[in-house]
Image: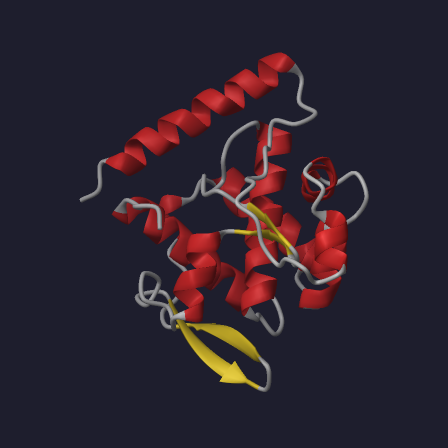
Length: 192
């Protein structure tokens, strides 16, 4: 598991709260896909990381492994922000406190609102299909690494391949994003 600064945990936690407050039926899968779509949009539009956490290529789409593990364990790292409960065959999240906008710029809140307006009422299954669409970052890596067939045949359900948000960016944009992500990761190394 990666080590996260208290600031980064706060951003992940508050983004999760925001999603739970503004989307319907937020399961673990739905939360992970919405966090991914926010990260992707921020990277591709602003060339900036949103949360700066890695998303791996898994059978069900892009997954932030550390968030997945945390929620699967009942929200340990994120317990000050969300509570996990089981209902039927899925885990769902609910906020344990109101959203705190202190860690987010007005543009970042606008970005969350855009993503939630577009995808917040979709089901987890719909979001998996959206992130799997042909030409998506997930699809391109899964195809390049020969994972599509293994995922379809249920021979594998995850991989260690990380989504490269600079794929398809102009070189100067990719460099700008890489520098911003590097700064983010360096600040994450200094936990409180």
